[in-house]
Image 1: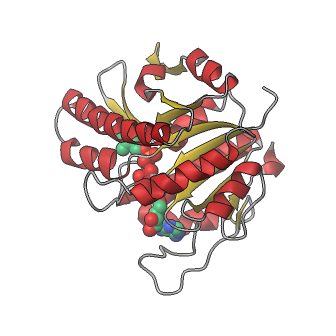
Image 2: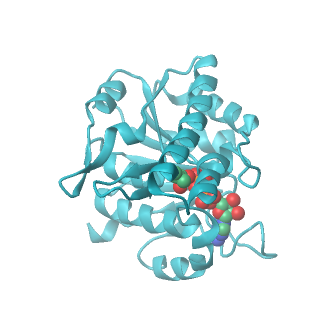
Length: 264
Ligand SMILES: Nc1ncnc2c1ncn2[C@@H]1O[C@H](COP(=O)(O)OP(=O)(O)OP(=O)(O)O)[C@@H](O)[C@H]1O
Ligand SMILES: C=C(C)CCOP(=O)(O)O
């Protein structure tokens, strides 16, 4: 692939109102469409959408029911949000199509497997595949709740990303939850020198949603940066210039960069 591959997550905190079940933030979708319009011919984008007030809400509601019920209700929620996003982007002339995560990633013979030709062919032909966080049924009938970040971990083996961009409703990772504390400070960079301290400060966020909140996001992305050498940028999806710059490889001033280069 001769263009840079960029993994872009439209986080649930950005594209939905996470505290209001089944609610889409259309202002965010508009911002996403504008950023994609400005950049999709320059780089190869793999888009992933988070679960937000759709899937996280479904898991909360059905988490204690039997695994099959949880799985079908969760997948109904992930499918719905993914479709709303894909249809919105298509209406805005962005060449996207949906890839149902649970149809291309699954367990077989005890390990995680991915059927990647559809993904590779879409990206190779200038189409933006839209994957999503998902509830995945295992061989023994249990359900694994996969964040979009985990999906990126799986497909990164095939489609080596040059950079990974996580769009949320806040400008990056702060010293404390900017929606709850009075003096949050933006952490501009996370690397091996401060990773453990940052994770320690995020521990209390683990239980906020079904995939471990900001703590699990940083855990997963620092590991992926370590494995691939890719820079990960967390920033607000609402700042058009920042998002376009980040997709093009220019780190925005108001963002958090996660880079674990030294241990490769
Ligand atoms: N220290 C922190 N720094 C930044 N955000 C934090 C922090 N602690 C908690 N948060 C919360 O994390 C939220 C963003 O993380 P979240 O896990 O919801 O991301 P997302 O990927 O957009 O969502 P989803 O998992 O639904 O896709 C913000 O809305 C913020 O309130
Ligand atoms: C809750 C489910 C099914 C996955 C959500 O994925 P995420 O919002 O990317 O963490």
